[in-house]
Image (cartoon, rainbow, N blue to C red; front, side, top):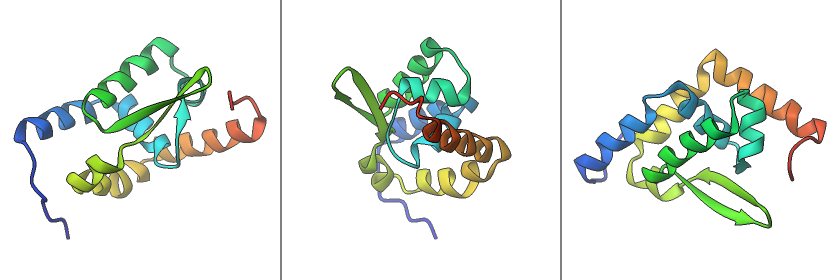
Length: 121
């Protein structure tokens, strides 16, 4: 069962606003399996780089994800701290979002994309 560990109501409102977009939910679903760069997300979701960057920025602003620059690429991953602070996020991501057909398809496409060697890694 979920137990609330405390936090600012304004933060929670901003988190829910960030989650109120299908593409951002799909991005979070992809990031459940590890870090990705913009070009990986762009290829799998078939959306423009500028849109991916905009969605990533919104998720980063709410601290749901974090980024790390490696060489010329910026990699994004889930922010473990926010998921510890707000455990309901993990429940939503794993139990609800991850089970939708489009998110299952996205994960399948991501696996095929990585196998193809077209990733920027």
